[in-house]
Length: 352
Image 1 (tube, helix red, strand yellow):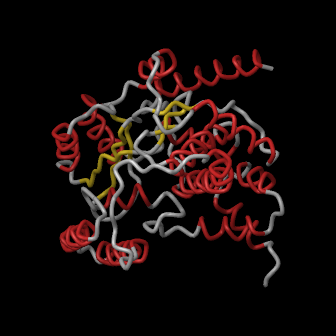
Image 2: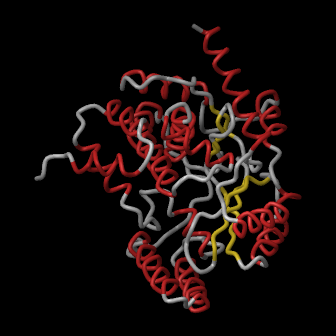
Image 3: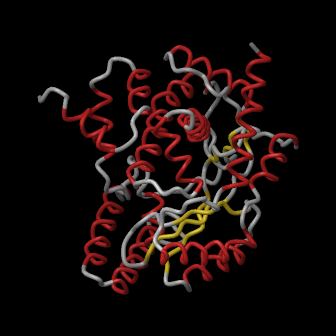
């Protein structure tokens, strides 16, 4: 069994390396000429800072790293696989996790609407000046950009999880990044994989993938954390927030108002409003470096996030409630190839 797992791991590594070699060079781009030109400009601006995924993945496999002092990765992996097995979810590929600094992610949106136009992985070692430089160059294309620190990176094997997360978040991130690898071998996740290669997919495909992976992280990760967490939870870089300030409510309100302003073509007003709201969040302890269209485009793909406006998360929750077993829900949703299938499944549910 161990030999089989090693073979699978090698095959998965080859798949990841292939992604690193081909990402951003689609054979048949599905974009209009103007969007293709924009993407060309984005990639030119990001080129000096872009992550060389194939080289980075080889280093990820063979270079030892010092693991997080408050997480035993070996125990964590065993606990994740144990819970997956108990839930009858196939463990493919094998769970492999390294706790080290993930790459940064450059997210780009148009200025006149919130849309996930492009994303590029950047080196994890960029300093503040380099981050500002790449954002400035992309913004000069009349676009909105943001370099994001991500909690995990599933397009690597082993998956990467940031050490700067508290234990519960770290466990959830480990499960979520494995979930993306698991989904890549199923229709829904494969479409997301094609989108990563440049074969554009509908936005709901991205949202469905991220939302399903998040639900797996919540449900499986919660059980793993209950089993793994034998010590006092530790928080690195904790942010003190005021208990009477409702972040989710305020962020939902912000997104709603920004959409209204952009729909009315009041772009400058929307950007001034976002900056005023950013200062409000900072005042209440939330360290948001930039609040712009790209911020909402990035956070909006996660159905559970207050920035999201897609009905995907609500639909998935309704569908999940109709299943007695989580594995059946994951199997059925991961075999979907579009939002219409999710809608149809929800519409077939008995009315309350």
